[in-house]
Length: 312
Length: 267
Image (cartoon, rainbow over all chains, first blue to last red; front, top):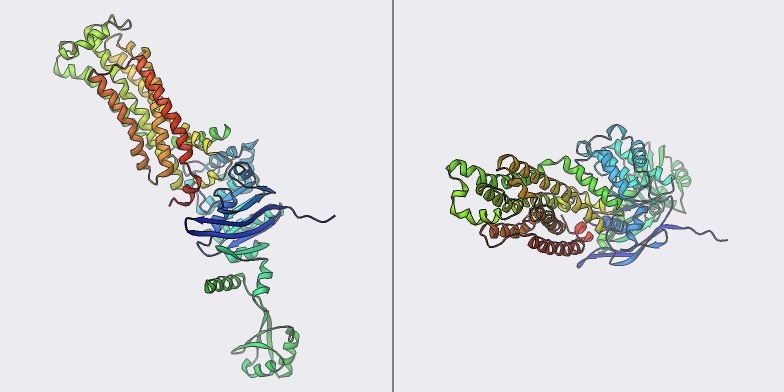
């Protein structure tokens, strides 16, 4: 019997126009339980519009969205939203209400059977019990974001949409949010996060998508790096590296870059790292260190976005 | 229904912590109370001339001395009863002003605080959202309106001639207070919520909502000029008209509340 992967959230050829302006064009992806999908892109690239369409807040001009196999429409949206938690770009708390009151309203709006218990559990999970009676206006930005996250997860949704969840947070708070995202993955939730923080995407996401109105690329971070960048090694020698450049080029090394005692070389099938080191030693070089150079997700992002800019 | 009550509870909790929003309504209520007491009780004291001595009020005195509830009143008491009943229409202004103050901020306030998007992502429907908003504003507005009526009635019972207070509890008076008042407030409130859904500024909503004051002021002026007698029949007729207006505003409210525009076009 073939193994069938059930898609929890699917987007097919999503397009959204605002008048003549195309905000999102032909975006497709399928997400399965336990997946964290990071949506990267410059400002105005359509990330928030995509999230709003997935949350059923705005309708696509073309294409479709399916939530656990059911098509998201204007009619089905109120029901399907029970399975969706959405952290909006701004925390959007009612400032004059306490933390508990803010959460209680949403627990009741989601029709939870035991709203008080759900709120208590959320307060405990987010370590906010001591601040439950504080007005939202008196909370720091990080705490507000934490309450907003608690609110988005209050009804235990299967799909969690996070619009820049760590924007403006201090490193400690951002770390807490990332830990929480990873816990959601462990609980088999689908998490789709839009972020400008490439390091964050690299740390938590199974897949990343680079959006610039259209999806430029979708893959795992490692696959994107491998696809766009050939592996390189950086070698630190005991003497100026330029002296040994000719010897290794003769052995088949490509794209040799020398800078003082450092040398950066692209490795390939003809000359792998051990062979390169061997040739250098044979040429009389003293080697201090050899490090494989890993391109960052930022390198991938910048390359893709700039390529796209150039082509458009 | 539980979603509506959740939203109403939120609106009321929010208003309890923002009493300043009722200041315009409180001022309106105070002014509405002051004018009839000034005309009916203070002016005769200042001028030393009783109202029954003035020929201007003779028609009112005769009319009210024929009423079963006020037949035993003195000429002065009959004129006071006429004044206090005519000015009941003015008391409607209090709940209308309160409703407008609250409702004008209902959607715009949420937009400005960026609290609307999280709200819209819940399973709440547009009808539930608007019902919650309208009830959340109507309940305190009507409570304030009825409170002002209670003060009015107590003031009349204490300061006016004995028995004048009975005129406030005639069917036509009760119709003004408990039928026209709430219906006018509801219409004003719905109008303000409709405008609030489309406007970017609460003042725009208030300016449109204030339109409901024009017919009220018109009725008051017509009564004082003697060209309209707000009988029970006329009150019921106006109530039917206001009910139709309210039903039309419910339909309009749902139509103009465009979630997409509110989220994407508003800045």
